Image 1: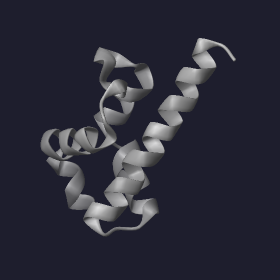
Image 2 (image 1 turned 90 degrees about the vertical axis):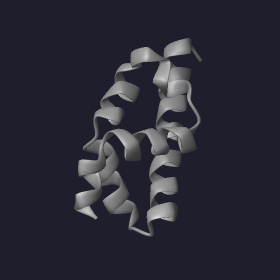
Image 3 (image 1 turned 45 degrees about the vertical axis):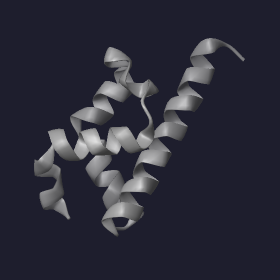
Image 4 (image 1 turned 135 degrees about the vertical axis):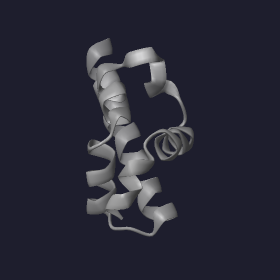
Length: 76
């Protein structure tokens, strides 16, 4: 397996952990957590690999998401 494939698998697993954690801490459905996550600028940064943000812990990323994109919580 090449590095690009491994990076994609890692990113997909990270996104799953982020959404599962959002579901847990916000007591929302997984579908709602997907809507919040995929509607965020954070998701774009992780997808693009910007600033190495994809290597942070998923709990830290959720904290960053909540702090930097408070408008998303209105969707709850």
